[in-house]
Image 1 (cartoon, rainbow, N blue to C red):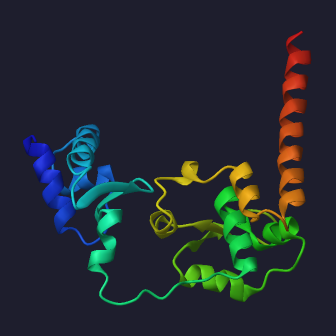
Image 2: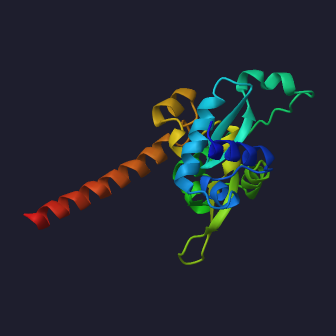
Amino acid sequence: MDELARAVEAALFATEEPMTAEALASFLGDAAPGDVREALKELSEFYGERGVRVVERGKRWHFETAPDLAHLLRREKEQVRRLSRAATEVLAIIAYLEPVSRAEIEAIRGVQTSGGTLDVLMEAGWVKIAGRREVPGRPTIYATTAEFLDHFGLTSRKDLPGIAELRATGLLDPVEDAYEDLVGETEAERAAVDSDEAVEES
């Protein structure tokens, strides 16, 4: 392991919060972000089969216990967090379509969404307010957090399961038609744009 990788290792070990490659480069002074990313990959491979891992969640890196050993460190029984069907649907919509407003969530679900449902997701640390939509009324928009990625073991939203996998679990039953209509409209709009461009070129 070279000196930069050792320095990155020490920084990750000492920090209280996960850090991006850019933040680590700044923390280490004169390190280049690209070199830090290479060092992080080296550390990830080095710790691959050890009791702790160096992992990336939402472009932020940190140490975490190897999944097969986590049970050895639990001294108290974990309280299982069970989401209601409504909260599960809302979380899925936000994760796949973020940033999204409450009205957009309700349009897809076909029912009104209570403020309590969003509060539960925000209290869990999985959803955050991401600003306001620049339209009349400037509605609040919501997005997922790095904690959401970490809890579900995702490196980024690209690792979310596909529609076929969600359908197999039954999660899409109440919103499947609305979601497919939305996706279909988007694809139709893209096709129309492609067609117009083809006509203009000819």
